[in-house]
Structure formats: C-alpha cells, structure tokens
Length: 481
Image (cartoon, rainbow, N blue to C red; front, side):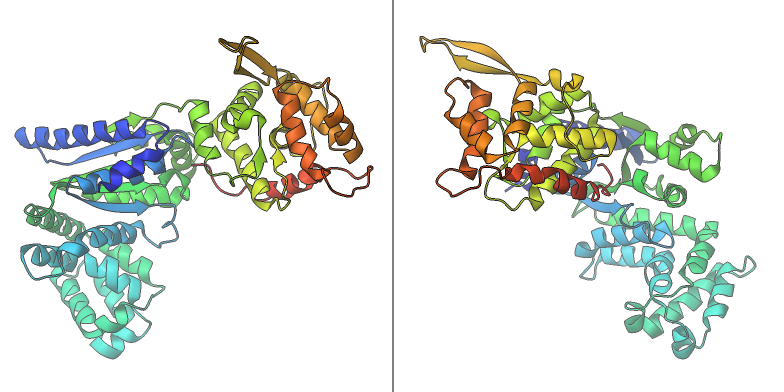
C-alpha cells in the first residue's frame, strides 16, 4: 500500500497538490538540463510562514519520492545545529540514504566507498569518533600530528589521505563509538582543501550514477528547519552544502521561512547586510506556499487537542475557534501560540466535566494579548464580533434557515454561572433560557451538581481555568512550525 497516499489523508492545507507539482517540476528540470548539456542538479527553496505546513509537506514529499523509486536524504537542521560542523550532518544523511544499497559488494558499494574515502572518513568517522590518544596508540600518529598534516597547506593531499586511511583502518572498532573535541579543527582543515572537496563531489556523482539500475535519478536531499537554527550555523550549512549543489543527479530542497532566515543571516553578518540577496545566491528558484485558510489551519490544530476534554456549542469546536480567531484578527503565528495554551490546559485538565470553550478561548486570547491569565471584562470589542451561523430547521420542519449566534452573551453567562453551583441550578431550571448557546451551557454545567450533594456557594470547577492557563503559558517554548 502507498504510504504517501495514506499520509496525505491528514492533509487539510492542499499540500499533496504541491507535492505532485513539485515532483514533476524538479524531475522535468533535471531532464531539461541534461538535454541542454548542463549539470543536471537543482536547488529549490520552499518558502512559507510559520504554521504554513512546511515540515508536514516535507514528510509527505519524502514518502512520495521514495514511493516513486527515488533515494531521499533527510536533514533537520534545527535538530542538528549542535554539531560542530554542518558538513557532518549532511554526510551522515547521505550515508544513511545509501546504506540499504551498499550492503553487498558491487558497483554501487564500490563507488560509495570511494566517495567516503575521499570525504567520509573525515566527516563521518575520524572527526566524529577519534578518542584522545587513540590514534597515537594504534596508528603511531598523534592527534596533533594528524591535525597539522590536514591543515598544513604545503602537505600533499595524498599524505593526508594516507594518514587518515591508516588511522581509520587501525582503529575502526573504536572510532565508531568515540568523539573528540578536536573535530572542528579536522573538519575545517578538510573543507579548506579545495581539491578534496572537488574530489568528493566527483565521486559522489559517480556513486549516485551507480545506483541508476536500482533507484531513479535524481537523489533528493531535503533540508528542513534552517530558519530555526543559530544564525552562524545556518550560514555555515549553506556555505558547506553549496559545494554539492552542482553534483550531477542531485536535487536539494530547502523548506524555510525565508523572511525569518534572511534576518538570521543579517544577524550573523551585521547590520545593513542584505540577507535576502545573500540567500538568492544559493537557490535556483523559490516556491511560495500560500497562507492556509484560517479554518483549515485551526482544523489541523484541533485534531491535536485531547479528545473529549473541551465542549463547544453544537460540537463545532473548529467553527467556534475559527470565528473567535477571526474576531480577534489573529494571524497564524498568534493562532498557533493560543492553540498551544489551549492544548496544554486541556491536557492538564483532570475533571470528568469538559472545559467550556466559551470560557477557555476568551481567557487564552486575553492571556496572549496581555500576558495575564484573566478573563476579559465585558464589553470587549473583539468578543462582540464572535459570532457563528448555524443552519436550523424552520418551525414547519421542512426548510432550514440560517441562525446567527453571538457568543459574547454566552461568555458573560458562562462566567456568571461559574461563580456558584446555585446559579447553575437556577439557570438550568429557567425555561426562558432557550437556543443553542443556552442548551450548550446547560450541558456544560449541569453534570457538576446533577444527582450530587453540593454546597450551593461552591464555585464551578471551571473557575480553575485561569490558574491552569497561567501554568500552560509557561510552556510556550516550542517554536512555531
């Protein structure tokens, strides 16, 4: 069964269509460049705001590519920005992509081994695993001697390769498990050697071509979360990986919030630096995701909320929240942060009675705006615009009509009812309170006192919400998608 097809079942932002278009576009670009006698490589930047579904897209795109027979290397730059040098993360991802196809001796295994012999021992083994004193013990070459050999501009490339090959062959069992603080010096020394980079690039091209009978060309390298990285790491990654941008049969796809990334780049180089112009040097083309409709975006976030812990009028949580966010004029980033607080609050809610969204949403919205976990005092202009249309049956029962429901009064009533169980009882017994909001409030509050002994002056458990929201707000450390 096609894993990609199943994956896109959760797609509410139209990203599957983006995947289909970009696949055909990128493969077409490779074929066109081949026919023109140019290097068949390409570098694409997918540009979207936070919350635009970039990571969701890349995950599905990778499944689609693999389903179509392509080899895919994945890099999460933000997760890997602890690395001393981003070249290690790039090499490791490509090595992982090759691994299933080079287990047995053959043309592909030989070609990839040759590529790693050119660049891999430094990036993947020696730099990431040499224990202090281990090289001297097993190979007769001290770490300082090895480092001097690599970084000495006058030393022949063959001498460096021979010394590294000796170190690797003599200490392979230990090298896989150890890490050395001198990795930066080793990697920097390697990357300052233009001949070594060129040699590796050529051998990577040969290795990719050697898999033509097993995997379709091109090899796709997908890089996500670059805009979240430390500015210096983002710059280093781009500068390192650009040496591989013109490898035949390799396509790089970056997913970034370009606006944010250019600010990071400018921050690394200083005030007045044109970060956008700098980025254009690396990418052949940018593909811009349209901002998702707020209702679709809210639907995605609602699907992540704890089931059965939040009650909404007509069980239409998505619609109630969408109209609320529209009433407040929140952008995607604000919506994401408010929803994170709603999610954390609902997750921590331990009562058997669900949270009333008419109380929770205004509280979280006000917390986002003011930083205070307090219910907004009426009248609030934004709440006046918090309305939703419902289709209801006419009195004859044959036709339906549109009923516009305002939640501002429901919010005020819910706030009043929460102050004591006695108010809840009186409200539930008052037949004058009709309509979908009144019925919703009965369903929210009645279970607290129905068939139970109670003190009429006790407040509803809903009054605990401000304390929970205040604590949930402390958890707003996750960066937006």
